Length: 247
Figure 1 (cartoon, helix red, strand yellow):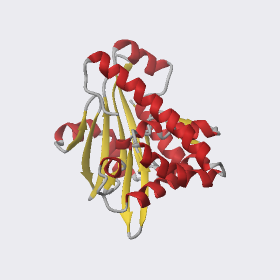
Figure 2 (cartoon, helix red, strand yellow; figure 1 turned 30 degrees about the vertical axis):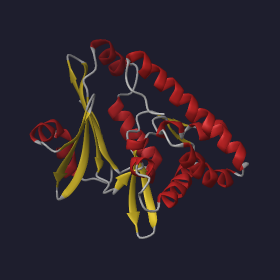
Figure 3 (cartoon, one colour; figure 1 turned 120 degrees about the horizontal axis):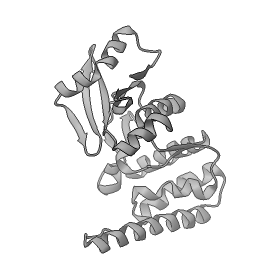
Figure 4 (tube, helix red, strand yellow; figure 1 turned 180 degrees about the vertical axis):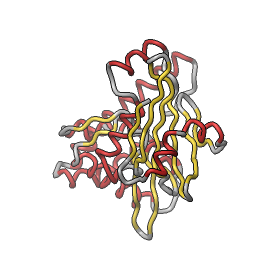
């Protein structure tokens, strides 16, 4: 067993962390279940999001045991590194069977968000869409200025809470991150996975461009290029599989 508990949490939470498989199995409040599963679990009158990672195949069990950090550990380490940009981490834990990685979990304090960025993207009737997009542009700029590149910057991974007339953003699912200076192209390419309408992408980029002191039209052209390229690539894969496409 390997684990790490955030120093902000006391010994009671260490017991919670060490026994998380039991808490997880006994809890039915699943909010996402695919390759990995997320559940909301209450402890000491607080709510936490617990992510259980799928047990990898034998080759990957060897790989994660001896050669690379697990996804649980990366989730925790990255959360500590990026601070307030993501929900507060509690800890991670890895369990081993026959000396190889088996189950692993990451725990974070639940962020009480109102919606994800998917809502203004898909609901054109949502009030204050432009204000949300402009605030999102500033949030993304702040990420980039702090040398943070979320490589799965997609709609479900960006949480939003409205407080009076302002918006608070948090990123989740942060296993795939890079921490370095970013070029203008890399910054603008980061918007591509949001699958935005061209006009909505333009709204965001128009707010982003002056923050990086770059020409607005130049930034729009670069952002649209990467957005269209990704859409073509994914739609081509869908066509080959006979799946309906969305432009």
